Image (cartoon, rainbow, N blue to C red; front, side, top):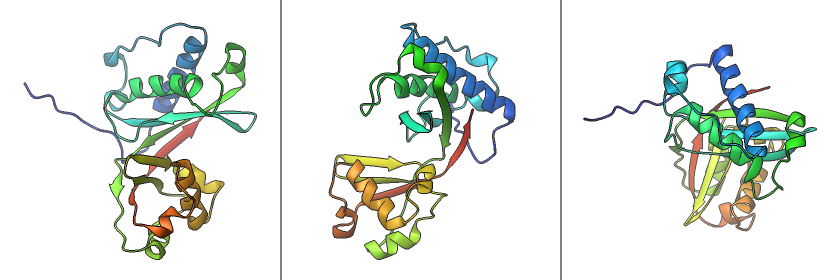
Length: 197
């Protein structure tokens, strides 16, 4: 029997759906930092849209500063499950930060980004790449061999110039800032539906 895999997107989430996902993310963080397992997900109890496969990033901030951000670029599991797992990972497994402590949880602000399927961005040279990006709209994935990194569209708020955006993304990938000017990289773009507490 072939199972049909459905994916999410194209329409805005309802306020109720956003609330469900934000509450699940917070519950996952509360349970994880207390050493408990993730909440059990009974898919049938959620709206159809949240049961569909979806790719999400969960971003945590504390007093306006980044405290953790982890997610998936491709949908491979129901969105409710994806959000729970990435909320836990953002709190405990982001290598840039120490794990969130139980007493910190109330200070966290949670943001969820649900991604469209990444699409290849074709370009011939670096000067064309800069003009093809849409600041504030596109999330960008750079790939060079085995190295890969992404910035969500929200990062444009902090790095508004495409040249700087690409340079910072190269460094995040573990490469030199100017790599995107020196060789043709694999570039993909995606968009997000973003909501937060």
